[in-house]
Image (tube, rainbow, N blue to C red; front, side, top):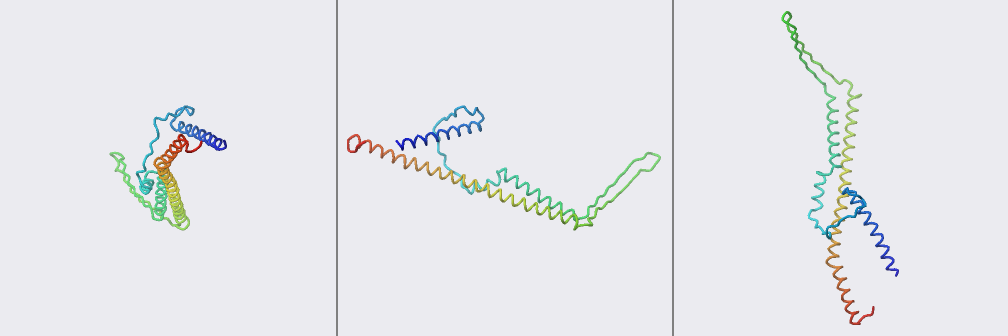
Length: 196
């Protein structure tokens, strides 16, 4: 009776968990959350055909989180380059021509402007230092994101391969052995060699 009560408790918990998962799947698939989930056939265990190294290589090319961090790092690199260019003089040349009419000569004007950074230690050097620090911060964030994603991928891969092994163990070992033991006990009980 105690064993039966324990099994009933486990069954109730599994039913609750099944309904919860069904509601979540319905929410993802977008029908009514209370609609029963239709299972077409028995689930088929898929074989893991890709290695963890291949998945980790794909992670850097396909993960939106990592790609966002990579773009942010490139942006910070360009900001450092731009801050360094502020150290150099900036020259601008312009030419202007205006036709004034037949009685007057045409009007020509040439201009050359130069912006020379005189106070490097007050403006440009701190801007370069700030841009470098932002670049280092962006690089560290990218590395941290990659390590987190690789860890999550490895955990998911290990869960998948472990579940694949367990399904194989149940299908090839535990269930057939239990079925054989049950049939043997049932035969022995039917002929009276063991009692109930």
